[in-house]
Length: 183
Picture 1: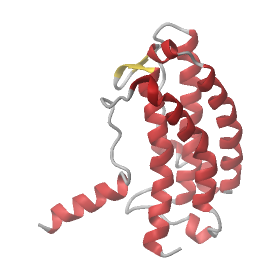
Picture 2: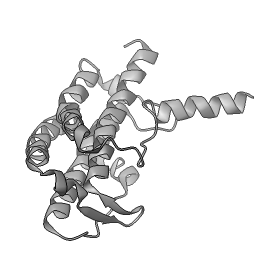
Picture 3: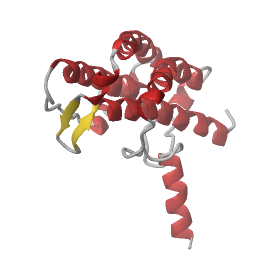
C-alpha cells in the first residue's frame, strides 16, 4: 500500500495542478482567459521565487526533479519554442515543428548556473511579444494546425491551452515547494 501512496504523492509533486488534458476545450469563449493566464506567467513566476536565496534556488521541487533555478530557466526555453510554433502555425500550412530535449537543456550551464533574473527578464520581453500576437489572432486562426512529431496534428487552440496550463504548472511546482519547506 505504501508504494501506491508514494506513487500518488510523486504524481502530485510532478503535476501539482493535474496533467494537461488535450481533449478539454471551452472553445473560443475561453481564449481571452487563457491568454490572460499566459500574460500573467512572468509576474507569477517572479513572485514565486521572490526572496529565495541561492541554496533555496538549488533545491529540487521533487525527488529527482529539477532545481527551482532549472525550472525558472526552463519556462522561457519552453515558451520561446511555443512563440515560434505559433508564428509558424500562422504563416505556414500545418508545418512540422521541431521538438527539443528539455531535460538536456535543463542541464546546460546557463540553466544550472545563471541567476534567475536573466530568465525572468527574458520571459517578460517574450510574453510581451507573444501576448500581443495572441490577442491579434482571429477566432479562425486558432483552428490552424501544427504537425508535432510526437503527438501528431494539433491546433493552435490546443497549443494555447497547453501553454496556459504550462504557465500555471511550473509556478505551482515552486509555490508548493515553498509551502512544504515553510519558505
